[in-house]
Length: 228
Ligand SMILES: [Zn+2]
Image (cartoon, rainbow, N blue to C red; front, side):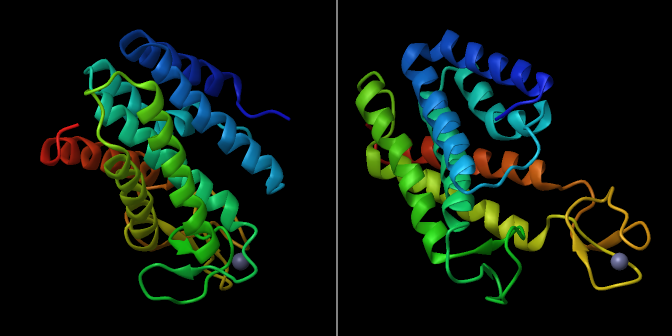
């Protein structure tokens, strides 16, 4: 069981240290809850993908780090809630008896396709966001974080942004010689793959970064509209 590459470990320690420095142990507890539950769910879903590298860690934790460095409890908690919602949705969705459907068109897609959602996965995502929102309510200093429903909603908004971007603007590639579809531009099928749709520079990591930014922004905005 190897969750992180050496670079991923360095990045995770940097995120953990920065968040703990500004937000204290409660901030680290949120990160730990996200990381541990996400890793355990990945184990349970038996998706032995490659260990996470620094880029993937920063895509999930970079916005939380920046928000924490800015002293924003709401932003950091919103970003972590979005990351947790997205991870839980993916891993719980792996147990769905029904195949995923694209969030935009409802077309059936193969498992693991970005932008594909299942009812079970969506419920899992809501649970992941609620877990982080509940921990934030329980552990964070009073008056500094948005209320539970706002934070949970911010996490779910980030998860939906992830699926929407994954279904629309994220780069998707195809083999020129067959119908196979890929999400990495470095793939060689019968021939090197070519861009079929989306923005070349927007890969899965970029979508994760954008989704956590949406979660952070929604939490900050929500805390303004309904002060804690
Ligand atoms: Zn091919």
